[in-house]
Length: 200
Image (cartoon, rainbow, N blue to C red; front, top):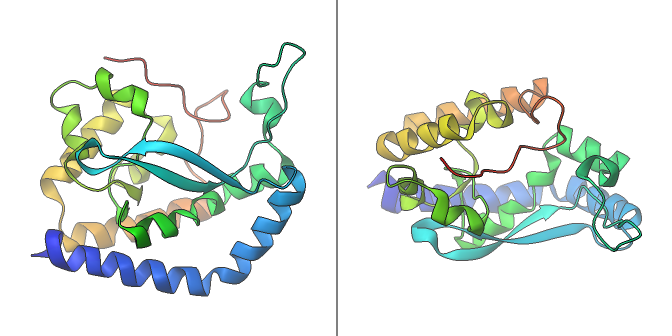
């Protein structure tokens, strides 16, 4: 009952209330990023959701689109703006995903939605991470986020799929708040973001 009825209802109500409460921050960050990114405050990208259905995730755009002389995008570290760095460190870049939750593409709690090109790289066990809606935060995020290996992340994701309950979701929610305040696990050592998954 919780997974199929109560959780979607809680997600919708929490996302709606969250957008209303956070609307002043939403507007300020949107304006700041629009100035830093030449009028492009948002980042849209295709991601696989429940049952591997593709949707467009919405995030604040923390990096600009600067390219080198050959037309290739500069490295992430060179494109990360000052306000973008702040937005990422404080996890404010996740706020627009409340819109994805309202639309039903995502849940508050669940495995993070990754890139479509990773789909063929999962083994049969890892593929079960797509048996539920992806989340803004999840069990892997409160247990290391970008500082643990891909294999360990997927292990956490599948464990969550097999063990999700209301009380586990509440635990993950409060653990996430703690992680945000202490800014833990945001990136891998020596990198701006997580290393790409290249398969098992």
